[in-house]
Length: 72
Picture 1 (cartoon, rainbow, N blue to C red):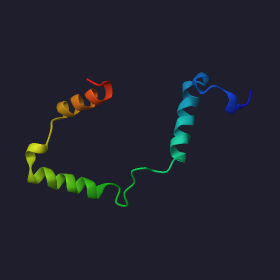
Picture 2: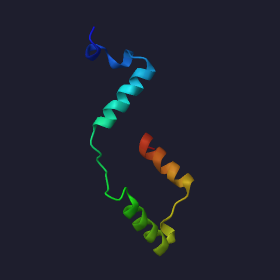
Picture 3: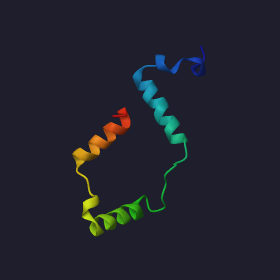
């Protein structure tokens, strides 16, 4: 059976990981900044300096992520 005919779920984990990595590397970046995100980080830092009440704890962030992921 040719490799492209092999059901991907039947591949060993190492081969699936390699396939996934190769596919991801072949895609163009969708969120690419010329400054690698430094401008966005500086903007957000300035927003927090101006209004510290916008900050959330890491526990709150984890909770938000879980809620979005699992719909709770």
